[in-house]
Length: 597
Image (cartoon, rainbow, N blue to C red; front, side, top):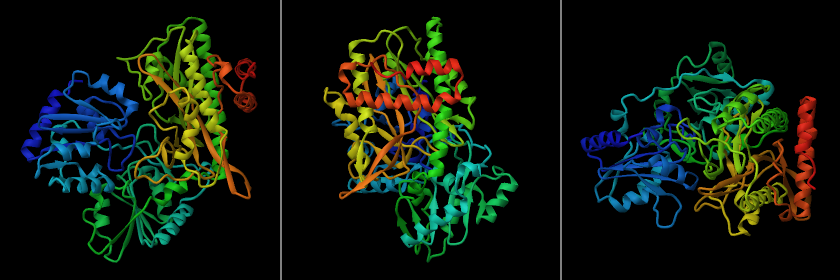
């Protein structure tokens, strides 16, 4: 895509508005990770498809800030464009806010649309800009006048999450949230994050790719709540059931007006990282603002035993789909079929679609062969993809949205002969994944404390990877959810402890640009692991059911306990999936789950 004309038009708009710069974040009015088309302005302007990135445009500069997961992809997609790649968290590369503060003169005006800027981000910008005399405007969206074919709002229907899977009623969830509100001293609570809204209301939608959520805000009062959603998205019987449960409907665009109409004695609880500033700009002066993480973030992260049972059954369905796909793939290789990365994504979707409760993929499948596997968030396209050959490594990262849970799995497969370096990297990643899987730790332990367990075998060979080891996973909700995460510490951030019922990914990796990548991922649930005189301890239950390729393992590098873990895991995979397979499939799986020699 040629970004020159679009950037030129945007710069003309900046001049007309008297602006020195505009910031185009990857965000929507709900601060989602995956965006409806209407808010993909950064992609429209730059041509960069990554899920993380911030574009800054001034009269004589355009820069895209993104992290190490996307460096190579950004280089390729920005090639030939007048946009400089700014590598986040690399020495001497300032954050975009710092760059603006350093490069703009006093009195300069910067625009960031208030409907995509969180309260927390606005506070950070105001603090940094004030010291340099820079003005921040959030009442302008310069992109609107330039993006003339900007998509409208999504209009997909909203439905209920079936009671048999939801495992709780919306009345029960509202009651829990109101209990947390009282603990904070709040009379009202504004919720804008789509996963929180969907969880509290027991509703699901399809407004955002891969995530079963819908565009809405929720304002919870002492007795009733109001769901702000576009008219026509809910059938009349569903609207009636919501009303019975204490939830009224109002048009999507009226959320800010409702907040502005709160009584002056109200005490409003909101999450500054999950509410945009446009919603609170007209908040009455007398309303007390209470800032804290949405209580529902923790509530929905702690899956009940009933929900975990649904997830376990869902993992069996997903495992069957993966076994059938892998068996097909091996047979296609043996027949020397001409396959590409695109063929794999399509075929895997077909096997998942045959499974009970399947709704959609949980993200776009990543099938990266050889050098493409070195891009952690690689995306094969019709214009840019690889043909598979009979050697080297293939990274296959995929997942499904099922009524009974959300899956996310990565397997790295040997497509024939692999190099000694690939064997070493594969084995180190496997050792890291096993180390975290087998961890036992005291209650109160956080993800950053556990992150080093997965990295230690990789660090020992002087290697590292640039992404976190694990993210939280929703229950038929977002594939990436908080509050927990297993990753290195972040400055100024308080990590949430791991608690029983949390589902987290376990996915260390090694990436060698231009050569190959390795990542192995299972989902793990935090479970109780007994008590001692030193307190309560926790461990992980591995949920994912799919064989791990043993062909690339450098056997001498695996300790006896690591080999025993892998054998026990494969025995579980075989026992759980066998009843769902036909004889030929069972025979294939038994071979792939055979104990290590």
